Amino acid sequence: MWYGAIGFSVYNYEGVGVILPIREVTADKKIYFKLLCITVSSIAVLYISFGYWTMLAWGNNPDF
View 1: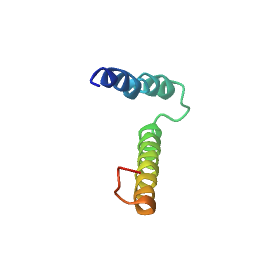
View 2: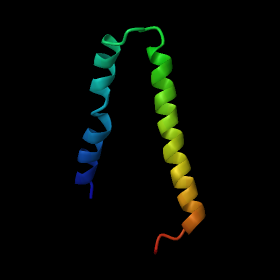
View 3: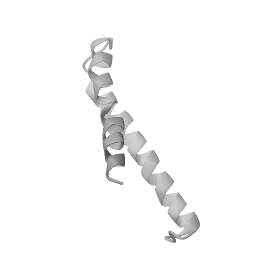
View 4: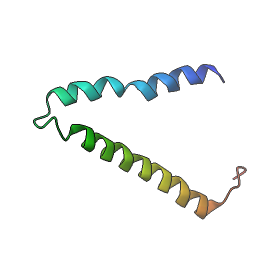
């Protein structure tokens, strides 16, 4: 099972190489960091809320 961690690690960090090139072509570089934080926070809230609502719907039963 540990070999799956290698693939997950590569997948998790593949977006890092996209952040700086996008910043370089952004018209207004002053708001880029703020926009990046808002976007990442929104995605995190979406994932957390989806997990929360799923837990409410089916409960904490790993045997379903």
